[in-house]
Length: 212
Image 1 (cartoon, one colour):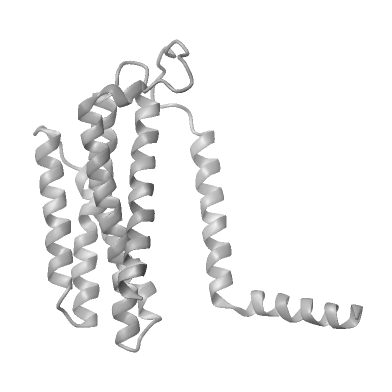
Image 2: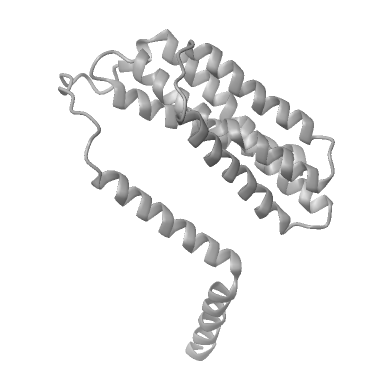
């Protein structure tokens, strides 16, 4: 009956409002919206002459072998980051503290922000390959160290490991900008996003299968 449908809808609405996970999703959506609006309304850092329009499916910046190498690296790094986040949730679940997963992930995020700020404070003149190697070594060493530690120590180690994440993406975007043909830097930066997101998706799928 209509009364039963109305009652069910009210219960569903009450559950959505009172559920902390729902609020977290709403907050995430709001932050994404604000960030997107801020980005699209910001003036360009520098003006470039647009490249002549090409065919729809031409490779564009993917002609650069160097850029393909950067994208392959980000594919692997994105998968590793996703596996790490899933692994932290599993560790918290096994320790009987599933709610601690949010704190661990927040620690990684805070470490990433600090790492990005510290990275931007000093000039980097070495080759991009050396920068990639250093950052991936920090990230990999952190994951290996966290694999055999108790919950609190995992949080500390992963927060320190997060220091490498934002700089890794900074270096990737700069490398893409340098390796792309003239007038195709924006498209190259978009491919950086594609590679990282594809790695995240693949890593999450693999981690879910392994931890189930």
